[in-house]
Image (cartoon, rainbow, N blue to C red; front, side):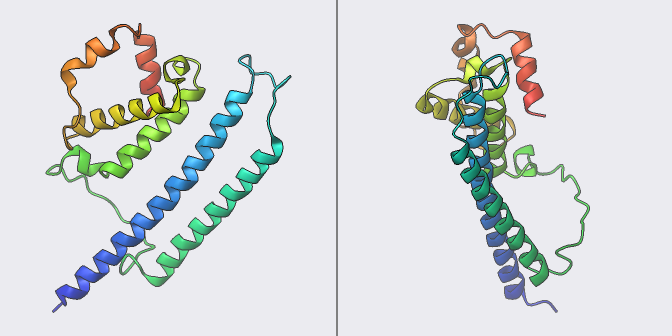
Length: 190
C-alpha cells in the first residue's frame, strides 16, 4: 500500500521545483525580450543598420548573462531529471490527455502560462510593423494594457472573470483598428 504522506510530499516537491523553473525561465525570457526590444528600437524604421546607435558592450554583456542563466536553467532541469524529482520516469516522455472536464484556463496552465503568452505577444507586437503603433506607449500605459489583456484572456478561457467585456467595443472604437490589424495580432499569438 502506498503511503499517502509520501505521495503528497513528492507532489509538493515536484510542484515547488516546477514553479522554481518557471520563475527562472520567466526571468530569462524577460531579459531576452528587453534586449530584443532595445535592439529593435535602436534600428532605423527602414531596417538598414546605417546610423544605428547600439551599445554593443551592453548587448554583449546582457547576452552573456542570458546564456549563463540558460545554462543554469538547463543544469537545474537535468538535476531534477537525474534525481527523479518528478517521480519515477521523470525524464520519460509522457502522453498528455486533454481532460475536457477541466476549463480551458486550467488546461493551458492557468495564470503563469497566460501571463507568459501575453508577455511573448507584447514583445512580438513591439517589433511587428503592422501593429507596433498601437503598442508603443510609455511603460505605465503598457503595463495597464498587459493587465487588461491578461484579465480578458483569463475570463475568456474560463478562469476568474476580471475584465468587464461590455465596454470592449467602445474602448477600442477610437483606435481605428481594422480587420488587418486584428488578423496581424492573431498571427502573433500563434
